[in-house]
Length: 87
Picture 1 (cartoon, rainbow, N blue to C red):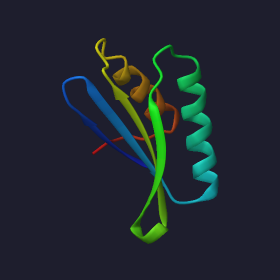
Picture 2 (spheres, rainbow, N blue to C red):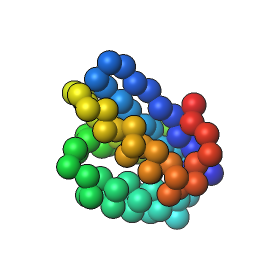
Picture 3 (cartoon, one colour):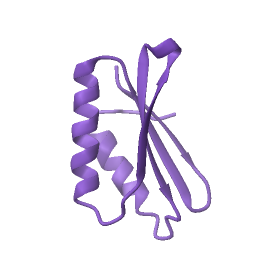
Picture 4 (cartoon, rainbow, N blue to C red):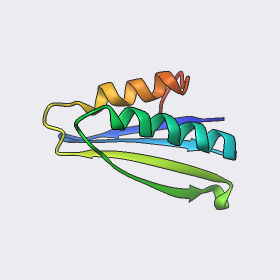
């Protein structure tokens, strides 16, 4: 199951997308790469493991997001991945 967590501060926004299987991983990375490629604002991205390595998380961070472009990008990612809610 793919799920997400969102955090933001004044000019900082982060979306963490967690997945378990290789198929989910491929789907998440393909979606995120395609959406980022078509936008002019480029985030920092990195992956990390959680739950003893059983789950992996792709983290997408926008810093100095003066125009608040991250929100629309995050919404598009969530919509394409069919994530209904975000913590």
